[in-house]
Image 1 (tube, rainbow, N blue to C red):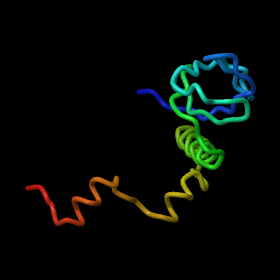
Image 2 (image 1 turned 30 degrees about the vertical axis):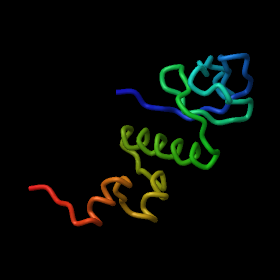
Image 3 (image 1 turned 90 degrees about the vertical axis):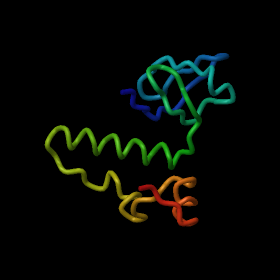
Length: 104
């Protein structure tokens, strides 16, 4: 399994970028419009999408919560955004449910 990690870009040079905190080299081939200061979702050295800062913070908090859980600590408010809204179906499944579709 591959987990995406939000990273902020310190610099870019063509299809390559460097992360602020780690100085890690990131392939920007799939996010060619990414610029210094942008947050990207990094999977094994490749950015898959550009993120808004608040989305990057939510993902980072969730990853921190999972890390805490694996270390036997409390989750804290790592998933506070989900606790406030509750679980939601993806749009296409919610539309099917609203239309009365079910499976046997």
